[in-house]
Amino acid sequence: MFITTSNAQNIYSVEYKSQADINIFVVDYKSQADLLIYKVDYRSQAKGNEGLWFFVDYKSQADLKVFFVDYKSQADLKVFFVDYKSQAGWLSKEKKHLLY
Image (cartoon, rainbow, N blue to C red; front, top):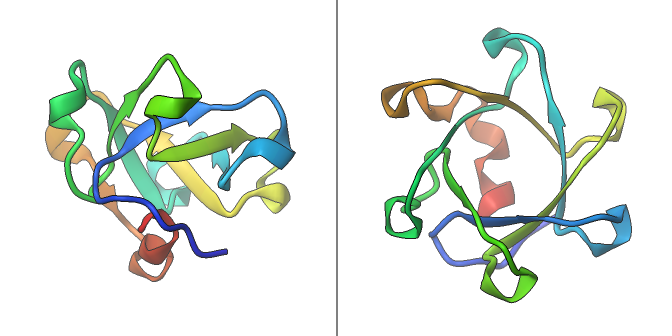
């Protein structure tokens, strides 16, 4: 699955899998993730493809539409939400292309 988005990471969480650009599974431990994500407070902080995500209110504002799946086997990407901006980033560089 290749995504054509800008380098910003403005994310919208859709209700249905068929509406998503990518399927995401949230893992229990950092070591299980492909990407460590930090949710930023402002849209302008969601720059690049390094795990700094801003969740927008409307689908039309999004660079990427995601669906959170219930099982790891359904996911294109496994993520873990971190507490600090400095912790965000890719653990699995081979999946990085999914968010471009």
